[in-house]
Image (cartoon, rainbow, N blue to C red; front, top):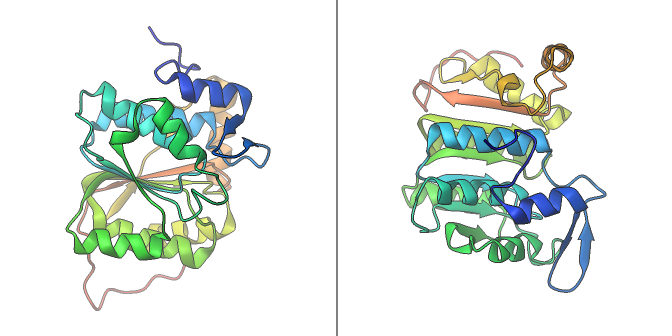
Length: 242
């Protein structure tokens, strides 16, 4: 049985996590700025994907490609034929990230699972809506500026299928937390929060206390919602301050 603290299902990802380095087209990049999602987040993604068995997935923020490796690998493990069923949005893939994420996917042989859209999410998401796309899981890990995160949520809400999962990385960030507060106050009939402790690598009693405290203080790394209600609210819905 696979160890909970190992990422053997994707050797390229495991190497990235161990070395914290990845090679782009012209240079070696390091993860000294913490760009890669945490191991707990990546493992949570893996478990959720195996449970949900989504047909189509969307990610805002590709960077080094760690989360895309998890998602594409899991599509493969679920015996989904590669058909670019995962869309990854990142306006800086070929510039800031030197195509590192794209190269990692190619090395893993997963490039045909991932449709990389090198543009800003505020441009890509409306087009996906026009194209009548829907997604069973959406992972938001792009810009951490409030208005950008809000736009990501606005369109993700319209693109997410019923019973689909919506994940926010770095949800302790005040910009992101503000959007989460808005969802909790004004979309409580549409989304239910999932307690993510069971998805953590370390599930000791001490870790459970830490996790519970982090959630209470709104300092948790990952926030997960399941869509349980209608997408659109009535035009005269009462506004709840957040």
